[in-house]
Amino acid sequence: MGEPILARYDGLLLDMDGVIYLDRRPLPDALDFVQEAQARGKKILFLTNNSRYTVAEYVERLSSMGLECRQECIFTSAVATADFISENLAGRARKAFVIGGPGLREEMERVGLSLVEGEEAKGAELVVVGWDVELTYEKLKIACLAISRGAEFVGSNPDASFPAPEGIWPGAGAIIACLETATGRQATVVGKPNIFMMQLALARLGTAPDRTLMIGDRLETDVLGGWRAGMDTCLVLTGVTRREDIEGFEPRPDYIVESLLELL
Image (cartoon, rainbow, N blue to C red; front, side):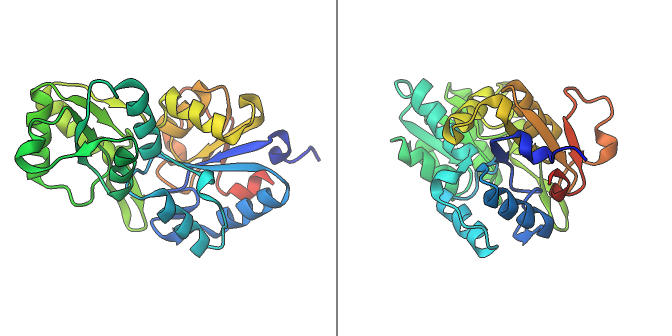
């Protein structure tokens, strides 16, 4: 028999929703895989497009499933979006209207943005949009007005859907698309597959692209993002993507598995 696939890599970028768990329901094979990969000395960075939760909340969630990790091992699209804004828009935008959860809001405050609401938000210099499970028409209206008046328009991630135990929910990408349609403006979307987030993740992990495996459940974000950054990719069929979705998609994943244990 040949060597296990895992032996070819020093580091792993692991998506979480649909790969490690569904909502808060852990996927047992995935937990066993992560523990075994850690035991074999592999570097692991949990890389998620979900901007709703804070890094501390992700650490607590994984810990409750038996996976111990430090905050440095979690990299979210909220963190990447904040870093992108700090690097590219810091001189042009200080007041921001945020559609999203606590994770996105916390990261915006980390880079010194002033978060505004209500009437003041209609004149915001920046609109940042992520996954918001408490989305209202009022929030969409304020965002439309601010964007139409010239605000920078940034999205945390393009995921149109969210894999929940009961099925598919609308994701951040669906909210961004609504605002793009209403305003005629395209958002700058930072999360996977944007090369900005992928390169930041590789730098944090500290492994070479050709010795790193990107593992996820989405072709258009995980697989495409990994390919753009020069990594091999693994699609796991426990989340959004089904086997019939793969036909005709380019770039094709290097590995397609029903369970992460196949990589061992």
